[in-house]
Image (cartoon, rainbow, N blue to C red):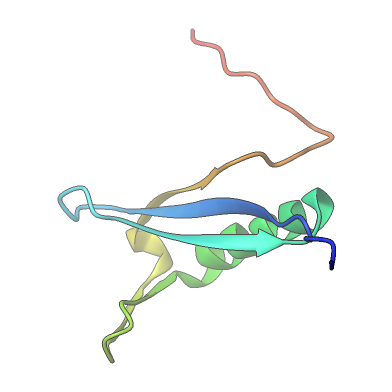
Length: 89
């Protein structure tokens, strides 16, 4: 019996500015945690620089320019050598 290969997955969430709370999301997968971290960083970097292309799968493609992006969130476990902390003033 073939051995089942483990897949790692995170969800990319793109929050749009001035859109009444619209959030687009999609999943990315990889064969290892290191590959997944690299893919996630690449996706959020490209979205931040180029904007977000929404495709609902129904033949329509909408491109939101970078200034329409409020924030990009990766939901899942992404390893990093540089964890940060938040504090208030």
